Length: 309
Length: 171
Length: 129
Image (cartoon, rainbow over all chains, first blue to last red; front, top):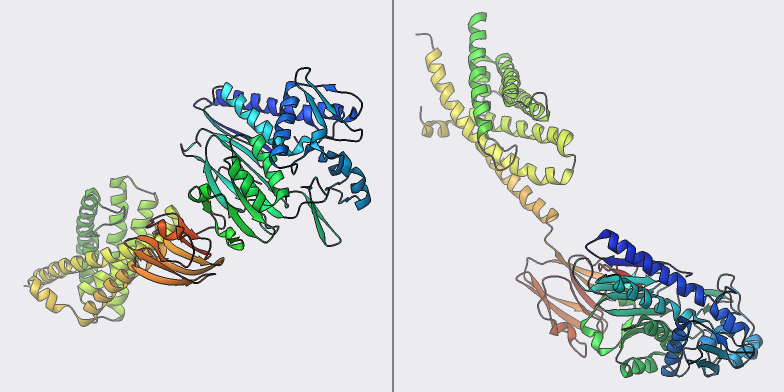
């Protein structure tokens, strides 16, 4: 996976922990291979190559990822949409390449999650229109951490934490026998790598953050970051950072992206509807949290830059 | 006083000092170097009655033999004891020599204790601790204790000196 | 010669010296204990700036000007609490007395922290980003 993966397993036996961690890494690598958007050999690439042509038989893993992605797309009214691949592939955040508006408009018609047809019985996936591209990058990291956690548990690990990039899945307690304490990155571009605005204690939960500071370039004085609005094909600009806390990391990963696009009001509504918690910093630097979080969150002095309304 | 008598006195005083020093080392102490420094009484007496050379010799003999007895020779504890002893002897002698009647034996003893402790702390810092914070924290405590002990030692020394001077008076 | 005589024989310089050393050492002990003591102090921040450093050992009451208005903080018996705050939900006041950690009033942007509030200074296991 094109990101830093860290796995911590708490166990009385070093051998047991190491074995479990190795198995978890293998699982993450397996998922990475299946879903890599840029590798021609991945199942996702196969699906993309056969868009508008024919259904592709895929593994249960890929079916599961796609179903979870579609679920979040439904929940966010299409603000999270893996078919954004048709447009996101036009951007290159390492080479500061932004497609022209014309190019974006031309491809916008390929962006619609409803055109992904999953046949569970035959385990096939079909993209209705030729030119469609699915990119599961917005959900595979979360999904991978969920699966890694499962593998750790199968290997007899009672407590652990998996971070695939910033997507975190924690279970049990930390080595000090306390709840896992997770920091939320300060979205301020001038902040240091490890500056956090707040910390949240959790267990048997996942936490994900989407922010406009993760991958971006500045062109003609305008900031272009990697979270694209499927409706416009342009970077979403209602939020600066969205953190979602829930059971499944695949859900929190995708939902953080979807809510980032939807904006704070809709976002908080969706969180409440789904019984989830979250922290949103919107473009006006307002810091909004779900009410349940009030007692569990510990703010740092960094959060004084933001207004809590 | 003849040369022989002088040597005899130095040997006697050294023996006293070694005895006191060694016994004191057996007493428990709340802080490692917090001791009464009773041996300083002997140094003080030697200074008042026999002069600097005798006192200095007694100090050298006392610290050397005591460290052999305590098994600290030639470790840092010996160097601390030697440095402290020399510092006390020289400082007390200088005050007596330079401003003879300003202080009584009590004041001189306090001055001796002060320099004894200061030098010991300094040597301990150089050889053992090399961390300024605990030294700074503990030194006022040691110097305070030293001042009190020095006062008591001075009073004891006054007693002994007064009695010895009576005895030494030619009859 | 007795003790009484010896004490009488001490010179003025003796007494001044002893007295001076005792007072000097005592003041040093007190002074160093203040400086080096690990007893936490209370750091108060308003709108991101440190505005007060107070001792947790001294009872005190201070007013801090925040974004909305004045927050009043009380320090008593090595604990600290918010007495009044212009914020709406008064969560900071509801937290009551604290002897460790911190109390944060986001609406008025006032942070009271026992011990220094390192920048983002919470010990954490991971960062979501």
